[in-house]
Length: 185
Image 1 (spheres, rainbow, N blue to C red):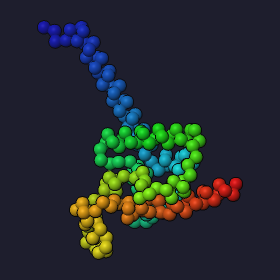
Image 2: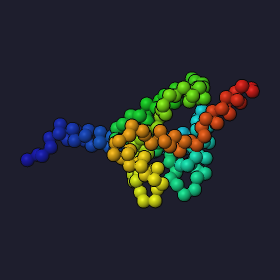
Image 3: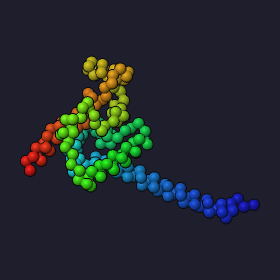
Image 4: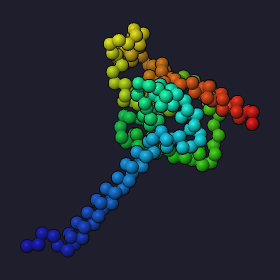
C-alpha cells in the first residue's frame, strides 16, 4: 500500500519548499525590523539630527545616567499589538523616506507653535511599556495624586501632557536654532 502517490509527493515537496521560503522571509523581515529600530538608523537622515541631539541630552537619552534609555521606537510606535506596531512602523517609515527623497522641508518651529494641545507622534502605550508602576512609595504627593487619578481613569490627561519634555528635552530651542541658522544663511 502506497501512503503518498506521485501527486501527493509533489504537493508535499511544494508545501515543504513554501514553508522554507516563508521561514527565510520571516527571518529576513524580523532582521529588517530589528535593524531599522535602532537610534543610529533613525538618526541616519539629516532631518532627524535635532531630534537625536535633544533625545541624547534628555532624560531617556545617552547623556542621562541611571534612568531608562529609550530608543525612538519605544516612544514613537504603538505597543498595543504587534500588528499595529508593524503597520505604524511601515507607514511612518514610508512617509519619512518619501519626505527625505523629495527633500521636503518642514518648519518645525511653526509646526510646534501651532500644535494646540500637546499633540505629538508619541504613543501612551510606549510610556506604559516601561513605566508599569506609577504609584510607588516615595514619590512626591503631587505626582502620587496625578498618577493615581490617571490609573483610575479620573483624568483625560496623558503622560505627555505632564511629561512633554521627557523624550527630547528642550526641542523648541533646537527648532529656534535651526530657524536662526536658516535665516543667517
